[in-house]
Picture 1 (cartoon, helix red, strand yellow):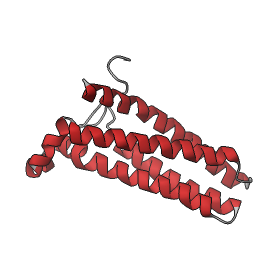
Picture 2 (cartoon, one colour):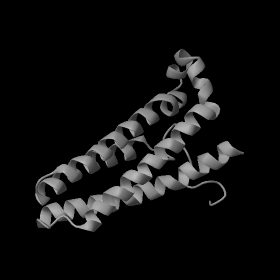
Picture 3 (cartoon, helix red, strand yellow):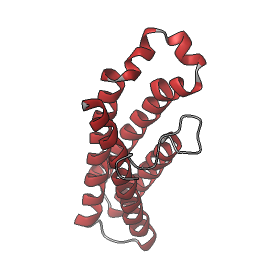
Length: 155
């Protein structure tokens, strides 16, 4: 029961992460292009994006180490031969952890930048890379390791 709740929460939170990443990307790229001053909304878009991403990571790790996937670690040879198991046990977590690190680095580097342009540039590069990693790592319905777009109770 707890596993299903976490899985559904992880699924729903995916959409909040995606929306917050798109909002953060819009803020930093439009600020960079228009040479705007770094504003509270620019910082908050990064706070919300990285906070939701960190929460998503914690839930994902709980799913990985407490749910059915934990059995994948007992026989890594078999796991690596099964594309679906490999995706959920290795590829998905690795890419998402990398996305969290890159997004968090972008947020931290933008805070320390000396100019508004440098803040926008650092955040724009890191948030873009993080978003690409996220989109590449989501188990979309067209993939072999597919997951539904919405939890079963919503769709």
